[in-house]
Amino acid sequence: QHNFIIAIDGYSACGKSTVAKLLASKLNFLFVDSGALYRAVTLFFIENNVESADPYTIQESLNRITLAQTADGLETLTFLNERDVSSVIRQMEVSNRVSKVSALREVRQFIVNKLQEIGRSQNLIMDGRDIGTVVFPNAHLKIFMDARPEVRARRRYAELLAKGEHISLSEIMDNLLLRDRQDTTREESPLVQAHDAYYVDTSDLTEEEVLAVIATRYGEVA
Ligand code: C5P
Image 1 (cartoon, rainbow, N blue to C red):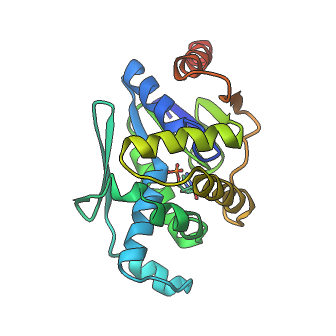
Image 2: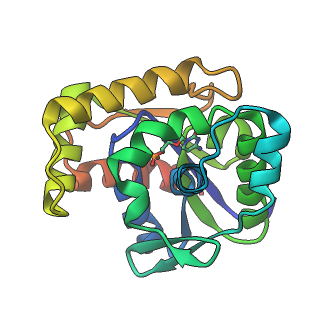
């Protein structure tokens, strides 16, 4: 693979995408938010009442979906069948359902194909849960991000509040822990640290500090 790939995996709300975006703009790499694609598929399932786990029904639904993501400065836009769903996919209803939907084999295959296609031709930073293990096992740099649950919940709370969403800290905490549990215990490509990933605990670091740690690591391998 001639293009450079940085894979950032880890638990929910560790600050993966914030840092990935900053680093991408610094290195002039494309940033890809894989979680947003799982969220977009989840939104489609919610809006079209796809409840069944029957593989045929799931596949038939996926055949009606086109996904796209574009970068606009530090902003990433996600499109579901050409409609900009960037903000709706952050709502609690989607957050509460996404880990169930992304545990489905057909859904994973659909999105992994899409991500690998994007990664064929350009330098990029992709964040998610299985990027360094499944999507790009040969990524040039792999980071695994972690943070204490209280820290993650507080950060997500502040983020949602800034967007005008009033969700209690405990509801956010419950959602993060539930997603972590579902993401780490599912059968299909569970969230796990790749053996060659560099572990970063961001609990007591600022965004700039996390960025500096990863940039240093990049400097060592680039
Ligand atoms: O990254 P974000 O928190 O937006 O991801 C939402 C959900 O999508 C995760 O909790 C996980 O269930 C799923 N996901 C995944 N594999 C990825 C990225 C996200 O299963 N690579």
